[in-house]
Image (cartoon, rainbow, N blue to C red; front, side, top):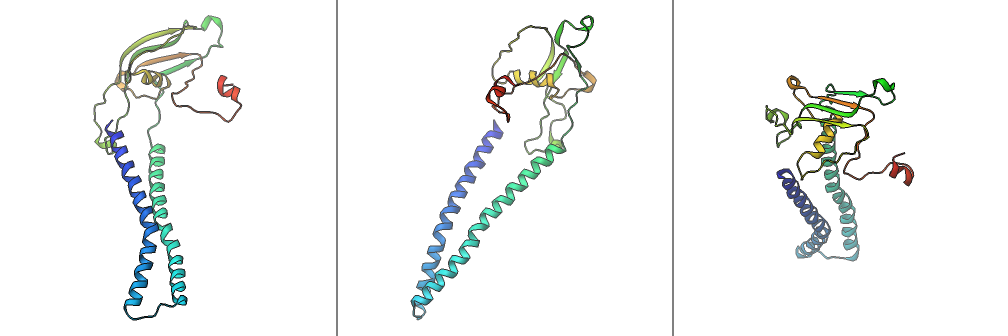
Length: 217
């Protein structure tokens, strides 16, 4: 929640800065042009049409490049942030799938297991960084999000996981995919007997027909 509040604060500041910059960008050239004309006449010069339009043309030419400067700086800053995120993603630790074993359903009937999913000693946690994003300042002892999970899901069984917000429903799904971390000295055992797919909460579509987007092929 604290990170979301900080994000909203900086978004407001960004939009207010952009509004002020846009207002100044369109008002400043007219104001500068007016001040130039006033100063030119105050020092005793005669403001002829040729001089007037020459000054307007010169200021218009300069204004074009000055207007692109804030946009260029904004694009450079956004590119730096994007590159930093891409770098953090590419240098992130690989997913550890050593606690998960997979078996297929197309094996001989004598070797097919009764349970589709088996979880034993399910202790998982998320990798939490420090608020500044520095992993070195993160807590050394991880806070477990899922503790002592032991359950089996039989083949053909329809199971619904119900709970409040933050209860760990999504964490449970991600633990079956191997997305969550665990302690090596207390490794859980997850067995997936068959194929596994996950439809996330975020809406998305594939580059295919409407039918295949509904039935997933």
